[in-house]
Amino acid sequence: MKERKTMIEKGVTETSVRRQCGLLGVCRSGLYYTPSTESEENLQILCFLDAQYLKTPFYGERRLHSILLQDGFRINKKRLRRLMEVVRWRTLYPERRTTVSDRKALKYPYLLRDLNIERSNQVWGIDITYIPMKRGFMYLFAIIDLYSRYVVGWSVSNTMTAEWCMQTLEEAIVRHGKPDIINSDQGSQFTSDCYVEFLKKNEIQISMDGRGRALDNVFIERLWRSVKQEYVYLHPCETGNELWYGLNEYFRFYNRERPHQSLDNLPPEKRYRPVAEAA
Image 1 (cartoon, rainbow, N blue to C red):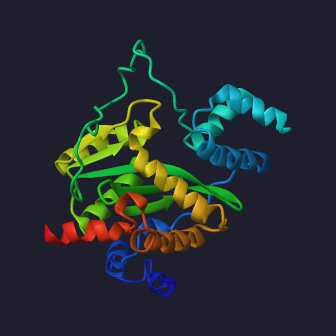
Image 2: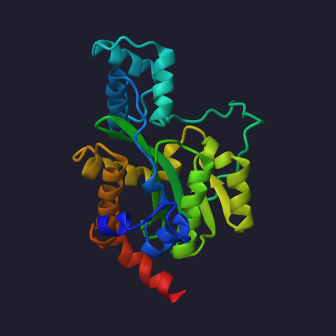
Image 3: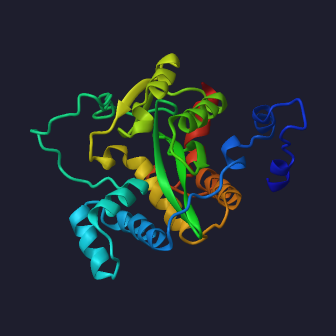
């Protein structure tokens, strides 16, 4: 895979980088990005928050602030809130019926409640997560088929933009066909006008989790836990390229070899491929 990727040339051939990546089966985003950086203390706090979220997603700002102070960090709540945004911390809590919605934010209903998901490409779940590295961090965007748990697309970046998500979605649709529904959280990338118009143009129904309810997208939350515990925390990377190669191998393993109890101990590809190929 490494040899294929180094074959891509920029500015010295008439064939565009996009076309070269398509011919070689390489995701374009892996070519460009270097890790985002923070101070050494902030990186330590970010790593703590990322690992802690897998254990206690119900902790809020006050409890996290107390724990960090006890561990010797001199951090105020304003800085903590910013770092919680970086790792996309979404505290789980029961929604109050008296909550007043933000009318300025574009929202769509959650379509998966009581929905019987019975075939591939019926529903895709999407999300972004924080990936700690040795000297900084990056973001991982992934698309999972909820029927089979098959990862149909993924990409890494040092920033979170709607355009980045749309590019990865477009590449997944070209390879696998389009789903009926895409479910996401209410993040700014997924409420942006360009993202919404992209889904509407492709006649894909839009579903969004309730605010503060990460478990509405539970399948991709489980994917994040698997990726981090089985690869990211065990193999901290130094560069974006190293991370890309490692995740590429991990997702190959996840899709083709890793057994899932919910799939009768079959890997996701065994559930996804027969339906997709018969369509």
